[in-house]
Length: 390
Ligand code: TGC
Ligand code: FAD
Image (cartoon, rainbow, N blue to C red; front, side, top):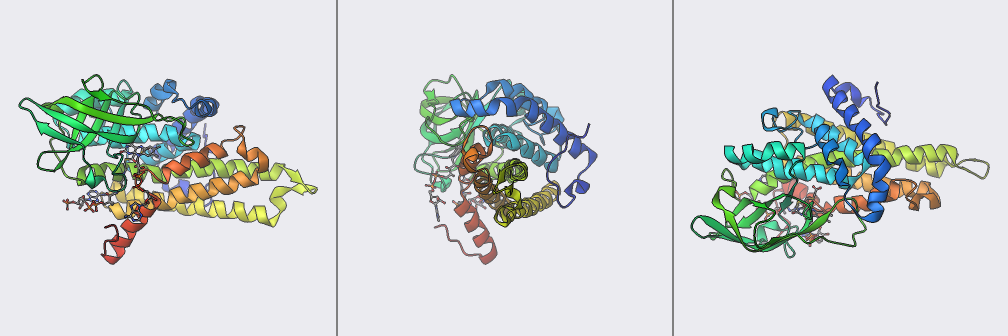
């Protein structure tokens, strides 16, 4: 059965292949069945619902575009985007787990790893037997990861890793961490650090008001001995983690549309049913303005994401184009969540509806993977050639 019930104001479905629609239906069906019924309670309790890991693997959310020979789903970029959209319709925190596993853990191992590393980790990550996390951000280096101080020294048959990472999605339960650290020469490299290595700990970050169903923590390295074969050999420099971010940011540009669609769907239905002053609140111009602007912005975001997907499929999307879509689409979703919350009045602040959870989640999404400001500066640099960062 065609499970698609969602805004498609510009018939964007006509731009999708049958495979895209099939992948989307499977993801949407799974989110409805397995995520929507449990996610509110998980968020209220601030617990990552580990029971959904197997389902995420089954819908191809772990490594959608990683080739099948390495356990991935072997899909194209638009299918990857649609899976992220459907997951984030459920919850941005669940999408975070999938983004990190796919684009920040599997992708660097696939792209920069040795054949042995690919064979050792990728199948297990695709099936969810192993969960991963990505350590770039540090307490004193967020928007400016190039300033990182985490470092490793050559100690003969192994490296010795020291430093700390902060705000790391999945860290409290991850089996492996892809960690970015500087060599003695000051060059950034990726290292695979495994849970259980002596001196490696992952304390959880508590009391978040956002992404409560996603576990966030630190990565602390106190003279951790990392075997030399755990260094990703095929790319170094800040460009390596930034390539991972390009892939994750692309997925987020699609994911945010899912959160926005869920808020819009909920607000539209509510506005048609809720009566005040003798008529549905959807009959008042002020509420129609909100709803009409929402569908306009969702439609623009869908077109941006679809076009970016075709460019990524052709290997032609630039990082700056990805920044524009991430920034626009997350900002769009956050504004829609805020307006949708108002349409629901007092009901909008309760856990009976998903809107307030989306709104709080999106406050993280607008900050992680490059803040709203940073992505604007990337566009600014791209169009002027003048660097306003430093
Ligand atoms: P800059 O001098 O511009 O660049 C350093 C080197 O990297 C190259 N490069 C890229 N390469 C590949 N892809 C890209 N997108 C690239 N962007 C730049 C560049 O050519 C250069 O190469 P080389 O050979 O000349 O050395 O670097 P910068 O230090 O000025 O910083 C640039 C800036 C600010 C844009 C960048 O650092 C940045 O994007 N900052 C934001 C940090 C960020 O996004 N952190 C995210 C952490 S992970 C996360 O949040 C996960 S959330 C969980 C989830 O996804 O759900
Ligand atoms: P800062 O860099 O200190 O920025 C603070 C403010 O200053 C922002 O408004 C920013 O836009 C502004 N600013 C900074 N520099 C400039 C400038 N040059 N010009 C103008 N304004 C500027 N990181 C990981 O590595 N892995 C993860 O899995 C991960 N998961 C995360 C999960 C959550 C829930 C959160 C909240 C964050 C996560 N992050 C992760 C970290 C995230 O990427 C950083 O929070 C983000 O890059 C911003 O860094 P910061 O928080 O240090 O803010």
